[in-house]
Image 1 (cartoon, rainbow, N blue to C red):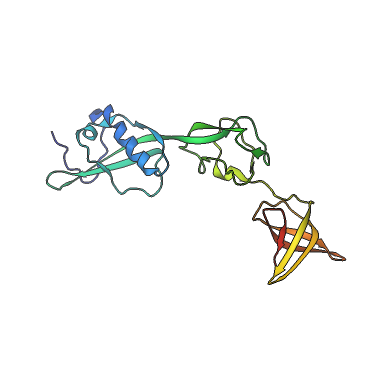
Image 2 (image 1 turned 180 degrees about the horizontal axis):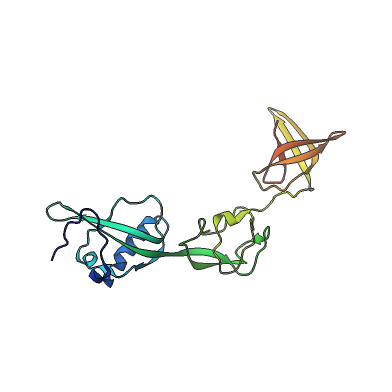
Length: 224
């Protein structure tokens, strides 16, 4: 018996469902996370509609721009051989898993992060409040932005570039305009990684503060 046209959308009762449709839903949810590669576990509130396995041309109705995870109601649709739109809706919960990094031991805020103290894991992404970190940047040292614990995935916002200069450190200050360059000694008034704009103090007979950008070599390029 072919699936009847459903208008409006009707939630299928559990006694009409079979378990064979989970893989279909897991495929749709995984595609919603592209280009990230994830593994999905879907559990129906009941069992899957038998029609899921009967046809192979189902599509998500009104595809969502946001990634799918957690408890939800999904609607699938297809057109039959006469071009009539068929729809069905059902509820369930999706658990999403993907690769991530975690620390091998606790790292406090400001502690260094490198290949020696992190390792890859498969983590549940379902309720993460951010994007899991896939790899550490090798172009510059990195530190933890907050305390990190073993087994918990590291998020992108949990990591920041290590300071190139530290507060109170003596630094070289450079002011350049056209062909004129003035270099003098100063003191950093705050931590700063390469590319950060920080406050510095210069001794010009009396202490005077400036702002400047931290260069790769630790020099602070003063702004006008």
